[in-house]
Length: 308
Image (cartoon, rainbow, N blue to C red; front, top):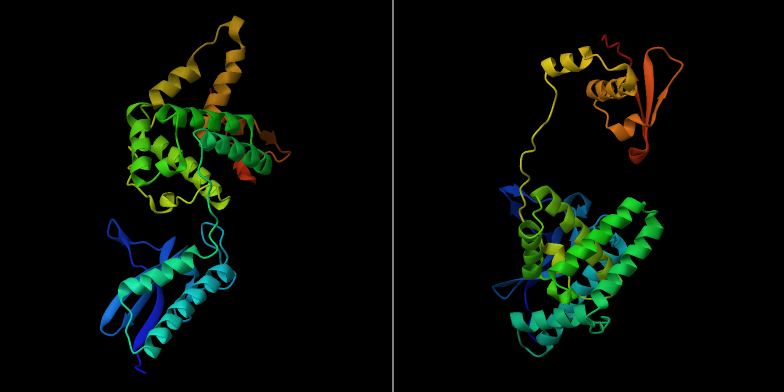
């Protein structure tokens, strides 16, 4: 019986984006060196570099990846993959043969398909029906506001306008690219808005993938380069501020004095109007307490006198 010299090593792929090494959501690869040949096998899992232990060739205990998969789950599958390939080599050694790269790939594919759930073919309405399920479930779990629900209703309209007969398999790399082009050309969206829309769609595709509604995981590796345009900063000049401060408001419109005060308060503090609505005056003469519910924190601002 021959002995096949081999070396199986798990590691993270070294990929670069714009010349910078990618350190988040990096694919875990198994490199097999045998009989003078080299073969790289994708494990099907990703993890941040900071959560990977290269010495042990596994995910650090207690870590989770972007899909919520635990270290225990990932490491168990990595071990199963390595054992399967070692068993394959043992089998070929007993036959005095060396497996080909294709035979190794076939063994890996059989392992990946082991216990795989068969996905029922979707009818023409399934995509949007499942989208409604996603919205209903997520809104209950995350206590969505009416504004958020309306936002996803608009997203559904965008998807319907893009393709009324949309199916999950349509959203491969080409389909996702076509959708972004549709948003840019037909909906006249800016790049910053398109990036947000892509994030929403990938959220839905990830949720439906984990729910076994489809087996199209092309969204995981889809990372187009979308540059944000420089935003035009609008501000008041000193001359404009002086005009507003010195303008004499008619006696019939005294309510505008409060509007002016609020405008200058936002200018000097940098607060949004929605945050100004949540301000509370403390007993301390030099401080104003601001509660920003969305960020779940309290801020204190020094009072400043503004002379009219």
